[in-house]
Image (cartoon, rainbow, N blue to C red):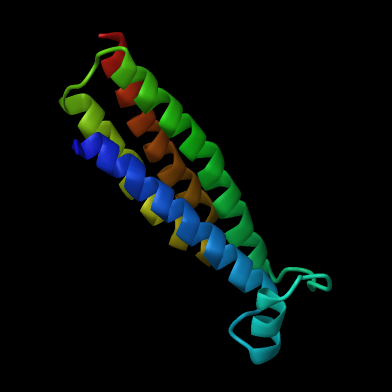
Length: 132
């Protein structure tokens, strides 16, 4: 498997981890009552804590960006492109997203945005490779 496709696979796993984390934080699964809630139908989920709300927003943002990452990578691949810029762009995207999650959970607003911009630069590198 090429490294750009490996980064796509890793990004999908990261999205799953982010979604699972957000879900468990929302249910309060670190407590017995929260674990019962997480394993049940979740009919009476309490309002999210600030941390749980940030985890949820980070997970949703990852899904949005994963759709873009998948689209540009698949389009570039189907268009016959594959060069070092695609690999580097995919790695930049993935590692920026790895860094994005804990920074978002910590509530560090401007750093979070800067890391998001870095991930978009990675996407741009893939798009640039596709057009060359």
